[in-house]
Length: 255
Image (tube, rainbow, N blue to C red; front, side, top):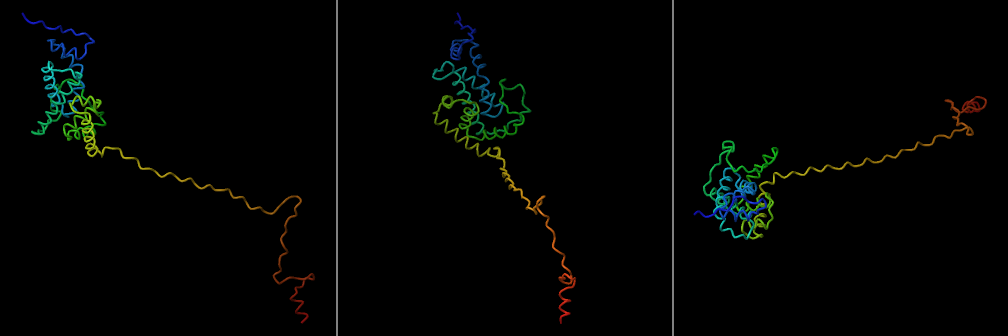
């Protein structure tokens, strides 16, 4: 007589740990439910770590097969999602090390089968930032694998440092150190992408205030002030006496 198989009907409120126990007990659909819950984030980690859709799909498939087979050895000392992320990251790092030992030239995205992959949502940048995203991806690919994994989990995926430490199975200080060294490398490689500060324009100096000049007072006028008259015009021949002769003519007559 065949051993009983656990029912595939799982309650809607079943936790990841409940589903994993059901999978170990023989439920054929429990592990699929776990995968569907965490597929998108696992796919994003694999894709950003490897930078290649085909490599990421293969690494994620290898990781899920490993998790499927090793579910009975899950100790429960961490969350199921942490355990899954650890397996995926390790699968990606193994592929990076193999790729560095045997470098190959990846095919352009346009010649690959559009149906390949896991069906997860690929993290994509806006169209206007596509070139920048390619430069950042290339810079990430040049980081050491351990620094790259830590940076992707902390800075891109937003996991807390403590959670990343459990995923990578290292101390929290190691995660912080790897992130710091990775950020320093990226700062050097991506420094040209920083927006340059706009040149400061000199503040216009306020124009000096011009005081309105008061007109000089002219001669006083009014009904009680007599008009100023011009002096008598000087005769071209000298000053004449009352008789109409000039003093010079009178002097000549006396001499």
